[in-house]
Amino acid sequence: MGRNTDGREKETKTMPELAPGPLFIVSMWRAGSSLLYALLNKHPQVALMYEADLLLLHPVFLKPPLLRDWTSRWEFWNKAFSRHGLDPAQFADHVAEFTSAFEAVHQEYARRKGARIWGDKSPNYYDRLDRISKDFPHTRFIIVWRHPIETIGATIRAADTGNSYFRKPGMLLRSLLGSRVLKRQCDAIVAAGASVHQVQYEDLVSDTAVVMRGLCQFLQIPYDPSLSTLEGADRSAVYEGKHHSLLRKDAIVAGPRPDVLDPRLRTRIDHYITLWSETDSAERRTISPGPTPSPAQMCLDQLRYRLYRTLDACTRVAFCFLPIPLLRLYRKAKAYAREAKMKRDSTPTIAARELPLHELQGMNNRERTLGNK
Image (cartoon, rainbow, N blue to C red; front, side, top):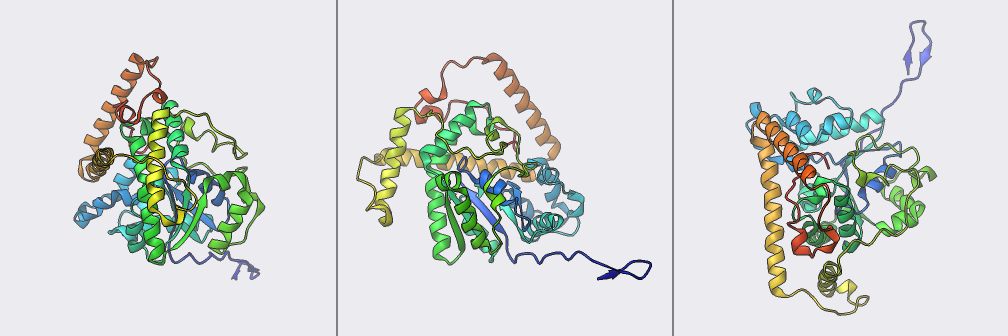
C-alpha cells in the first residue's frame, strides 16, 4: 500500500512472480503451434513471444563484448522487438551473453502484460530441444503434433499463397525428415526428466476446451472458457500473410483442407511413416507393416536434408557477422529479383502439387526475405 499526497492510502499493483524458467511451444511448420499460441496467450498469466527465435542467432554472442550487437541484428533479422512493442535500446548495454539476453527480453515482455509465464513459440526450435534444456534448466515444453501428410499439405498450400518462406527449395524435405528429428528430440528430453506436455493438432481443433483445460493444469494456472476460442486473441506479433488467414478468424476451423499432395509424394511420405512406425515399439501394435524407403533413397534424402540445414545455418551465421548495410543490400536485391520473376511468371506452367518430391525440392529458387515468415 502507498499514500496519496493527502495522506489517504492507495492500492499499489503487485507484479506477479515470474516463472523460474521459460515455456516453449514447439512443433513442425504448419502444425498448429500458431493457433495454440494465440489461444494460450489470451490467458492473463501467459505472455509468450511469437517466433522471436533469438536462439537462432546464438553465434552473435561469440563476438567480443564491445562488438556484440545482438539487439540491432535481432531486430534486423525478424523485427522481434518492434513486433512485440519493445525498445532494443533498453537491452543493448547491460546484457552480454545469450541466456541473460533471452531472459531479459522475454521476461520484460511478460512484465508488461503483468503475466508470470514467459517464453517463446517457434517451430524453428524443433531440432534443438536438448540445447534449450541445457541453457534453461527449468524449461517447460508444449509440443504440438500433426501428421506429416497434413503438415506437408499445409506447407504446399502456404506456398501456393505466394509465401516465399514455404516456397524455398527443400522445404518439404525439411518438414518430412524434421518431424522425425522432433520426435527424437522430444523423446530425449522426456527421458531426461524435462517437463513436457504433448498436444495433438486434431484434438486442439476438434476438442479445444478439453485441450486447453489440460494445458492450464500442466501450467498450474486457472482455466477460463474464453481460451477455447480465437475471439479477442492478440495476433499483433504474428507475421502478415495469407497463410495465416484462418488464424485471424474468431472461430477455429476444424474441417478438412483441400488435398494438394501428388500421389507419388503421398506414397513416399507413407513409406517413411511406415519405416518410423516399425522402429517405434509403442506403435507396432497399431500400424500394419508396409513398404519402406529404399536404403539408397534414405541416404539421398538424408544428404539433401543435411545440405539444406547446413545452408540454413550458414545464412544465420552470415546475419550474425556480415555488415548490416551489406545484408540490407542483399535483401533489396533479392526482393527486386523476386518481383521481376513474379512479373515474368505471372501464370505458372506447372502446379506444385503435380510434381514429385525431388522436383518440389528445387521447384523454386526464390528465397524468403529473412524474418518475413
